[in-house]
Image (cartoon, rainbow, N blue to C red; front, top):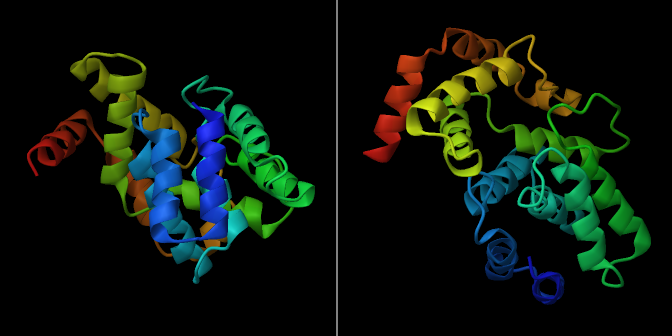
Length: 215
């Protein structure tokens, strides 16, 4: 990633928070990413506005835009790396308090995070990144693409990986932890979501992938 180029685009975006400038920042950062790329960031921005119930502010948008930028370097440590990249890019552009608030939110966004959230920004980023609990098909596609593009698995192995990953992460006993903000907003849908995860089978994943490819 060319951090100097990203920095220039962020400055343009802060000066003029237009949809076009936001898209340019996202595309500059994620132009060669796979499953956690441009479409994912834009989906999380939409989810954040829905959960918040109003337009996102600058801190919220920057937290969402940068939260996965470390994935290209190291998936397991991407939350730490993403926060470091954000600090580097925004040094002397934003005040230190804002930088640390956003960086801390990025560091806590992973589904496996078991600690406490200190403010609404941290909860909103984590909640937004979980996606809509009705959208099991999107989770299947992302998990499949991650196996195919990032882990370099075969198509059949990517299907098996997707099923195992979804069961381990999103079931009632899975490692994905949901912020109170998320559980409150989606309270009526979570039981349906858990049942969809419990009932998910290989044939369902194959059908979802086939329909998405031919849709």
